[in-house]
Length: 150
Image (cartoon, rainbow, N blue to C red):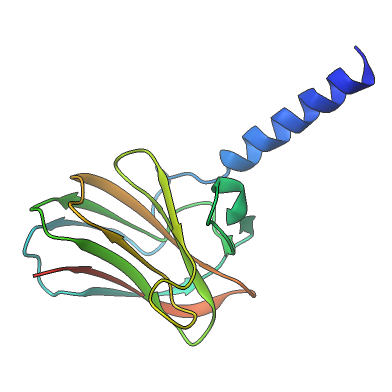
């Protein structure tokens, strides 16, 4: 093998490994629930520690911060047409990463204003949403909030 071939093979393997570091099917660290349209309480709040050791930027454009390998929380959402909002609130700089039922990664850094992230799914699909709350600077206390527009 030439040096170029070896370099390309090693680079491709490293990229695949980092993209596969996130495991949406792993048990969620802070639990899981099933939500149906019109769920109560609205918003659903989950206290957690944001952060991790995996660089979220490996997941694609707009992804940033450090997240854990396993999701922090998982919801099985039975959609009803209203917008579904996933956000985090913290005094620290946090980020969101969501693996949606469409199989895509959705990321946000400051969508809720200040240092708080927010992802809004307009006309959300039914299915599983694996959620990571990451941090920019080490681990951080945060509140994950899942709400539905009414």
